[in-house]
Length: 461
Figure 1 (tube, rainbow, N blue to C red):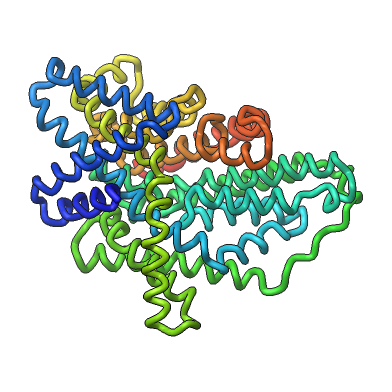
Figure 2 (figure 1 turned 90 degrees about the horizontal axis):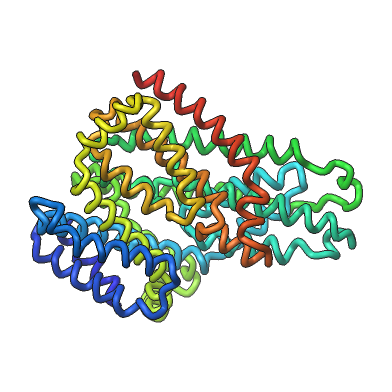
């Protein structure tokens, strides 16, 4: 139960500004990483190792190493806290009949609508479930896509596997752009204080719509129409859209509650989300048990949270260690490499303004393909460009370029968690699912997004 204590101490420091609370949270976070080390896969171990090397080397490269370490661990604890607080929503959603019903409605659509509902559903449900939506929809797809359901035609089953899993991965990949509860938005608002979420979030939602529409057109253009008559179209369940609208209303209610806390308490939106999420999750769990009476529903929900705490927080070790290490590394690198020096280097190469944003976009999309996690790349970039005006950028354009590149990386890199989960469920190679199925789509979407970023830059100028 160390991680919940890190969350409480970090939130306390953000609210009260008392440094001992932060330091206590830092110590506990290090203790959490140490205790989880034997069970960590290689990627977070490498990230933690890099962070450790930078800590050792920092005194020789910084005039104020203690301040840099304090800021770095603040960022690490903040990212860990974000995951811990939102995990309550994920725990409530996993056991929700509404979520399961949404999944059933989404996968039962006819072929012409299936991509749109799967990609849109992966985005929408992913706002609350995060990675768990891949397990939910991926498992549903695998169970529904049997040889019998394909009319005994193996080729139909294989084509359905490719199209349906691609839809889920690409839809989930838009979360950095369109989710107000994503770590991406929280990271951007934390590392680049001049970004206004009221401007960035609508643009992110518009970009999400563009990517989802582009994906649907791409899917329809490549649909094997010669196989269409082999299997009868399924009949979707009645009342399905009402179920999806109810879930969308639930997502909106959580976000609006956070906005209300932001307005009344005078805190940032990410902090308001973290203060709101555990309470919203508990109320949702109580509502799921309302037929048992209010008091019994409250007691059962509290008992469920207590029983599931070990699995809930222990199962986050990979994400927590990766994000914490990324927060620490990004902050330390930014302290060692001054923004003015980086801006001068880019300017000497003829990069200023929009070209810098496009470089950020390409870096975010390309570097995860060779093993660097999107969160690590984004943390380093945003920490180094925390004052984007030095680079001739508007904060909004920097944020949108980061979010757009992150979205493409999630749906294509064979080392990202989303592709690894989908490939495991489908029983296929991550390289096939990430690169084999999506490299053409990724290049096409990248071209569209370059044009879109140029259009946004023209309007912001």
